[in-house]
Figure 1 (cartoon, rainbow, N blue to C red):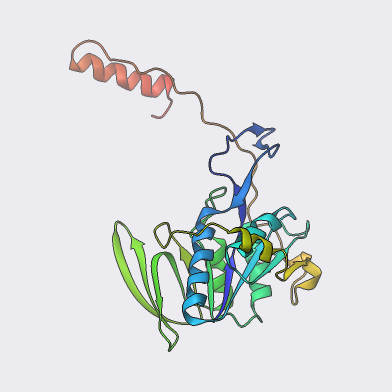
Figure 2 (cartoon, one colour):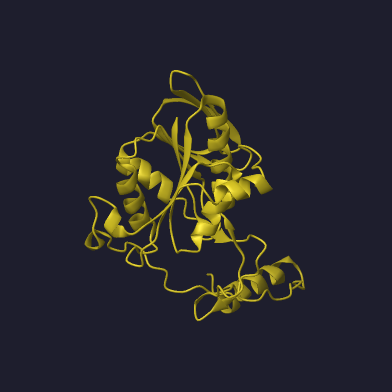
Length: 257
């Protein structure tokens, strides 16, 4: 099986978020594999252990994202590709367009990604890639079985229940928590990762796409923390007085009505 895993480097989920000038400060931050992408990496490795083949990692991001790719290589993935180019906007539509252009001629039997990234939480990139490549896709999977005939049986979260779907490969799936328990890189794995193929590409290396095509569709204007929570208020008086006081507070103080 020729498996490609979409991977993003994100903040450690235990990091304290510091906002500076309407954005997140990256000073002294610890970076990790996006946790949902880690499930995708683990599932890809397990599938190759069962069926044979190769696990390829793919990411768009800054050069430091190479650290996350090296970690995934140490887990057991075979090769990694990092597309780093300042001309690529940090916009889900543009990133998906670059990744799908690269994947178009890679002959992927299966593409795996995380359900969403813990920094932006948009959950758009993988699904957009499937749409652009014309692949069937299923999100939030919690179980994946693949037969020798190339048919996948997938379990996915569906509003508190489980949906079971059959789909023929090639296809794209996004991983949800519970799909597996990702392994830790071993020391031998870390040493082997240093010798595994790692390609650093720019936009010029991606056929069929140019910077002019990557028009930004969404822009983050600024980030801010929610206002500090104020102490609760116990309304006084009989029921009619409490209702009147509540309405006044909602209208004058909270300005929600």
